[in-house]
Length: 335
Image (cartoon, rainbow, N blue to C red; front, top):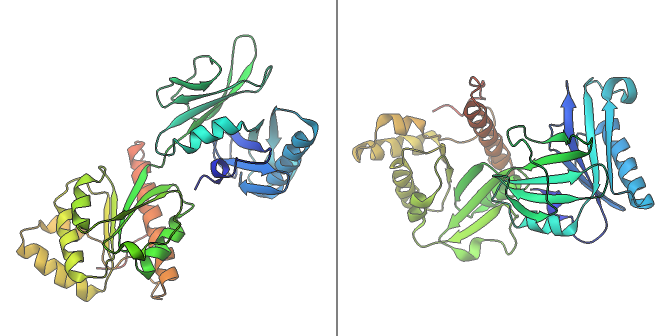
């Protein structure tokens, strides 16, 4: 996740940011690509637009330019079927800014990059408070990533860098759990990975993963943030049961998936009802997990199916939180 920040150390590099989009474009404002002399990280959408952006970025590395803003008409000039207009901001990335951002992965930030005049830049927190760089003019925080122009004509890239909104508590470090962590490694989410068996975790985990080796995994449920998602796939049905009960005591669960067959679901339903759990909470439990029609039990296949399911759930939640009508979600496996 956020390869451009992780890869910003070392060689000189140009960061390409989608500054604005008019009509249809391959990526949204704020999407980024890091271009170094011998490597490219992330993408602004591919196609002819990306090829041109890479050429411009490498020319900047060669001629020493610091900043550049360019307008691309996708249809007329590049032959891309999107047909819209994309404005790309190019900047030599400041290593100190990248390092600060890497340490703020859990916090929203604003980057301000002067596109005219001196190559000034700054970093602010979510509320617009200055953290690093040069003093900057007031900017509109309700607009997201955009280009701002001062009265004297000087332009700034105002770039919103959001922390991941989606948080998954993943219980179980077996083959399927490990495959899910790999599948989520470059997705915009945070993962708390929990297991009793410390030796089951790999030596290296992705940047968006925090490992918790705990003898009482169910105790971590109470400390999860509101709206978190939970995925239970431990080595023990008894532990799965305890975790299910703990999760269902919370009224602010975003999504709860339990690995297992319809038979396991029926068993858990019976036990949960016997413990007084409300039927509506039980009905909301997703078991079996994954998209319908995918029956292959290989860990990588299960991971792909479950991660697609999670992305659909998270996009629906983000859509509704923005005040938009519900999306039509892909159905879960039948219960």
